[in-house]
Picture 1: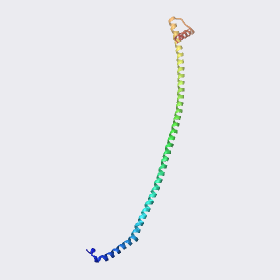
Picture 2: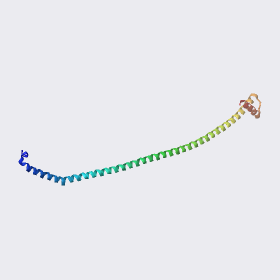
Picture 3: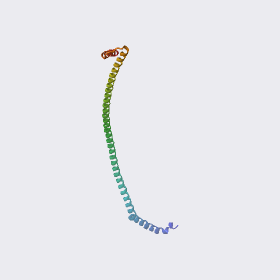
Amino acid sequence: MPQLNPEFFISQLFWLVVSFSFLLVFLWRISLPRIGSVLNKRERKISNDLTTAKELQQEAEKIQNAIENQLKQARTDASEMIKTSLTSLQDKAQIELDKLDKELDNKIDQSAKAIEKSKSESLSQIQIQIHEITKLTLSKITSFEVSNDEIKSALATNERSLN
């Protein structure tokens, strides 16, 4: 094997030093600065992105808190509006019920008066009819005429004894 041959050691060492020196200079001057700049750019980009993400997250939290506060306020306002509407409607309903109660009481009173009036008219008509029937009956049975005053007093006496 020619690599292990001692007469080629010096030339191999020379080219080894030259190759590694060239490689070292190439890496030190060209490749490593480029890799370092890429790593620095990547690190700056990541840190900028993290900072932006934190800022956006804080803004999102602020917006979420604002939305939650607005929702709470809207719920509170809606609840208040419902309560006021409900009390307003209950008041209106109570007023209408009171009006209807008064109207019904008036109609009941008017009906009661009309019934009482009709009853008294009917009773007076009945009294007149009883008076006439009694007069006719007495005249047919007894064949003599009875005066209206006598019939009225007899009917009144009979009516008092029934009550």
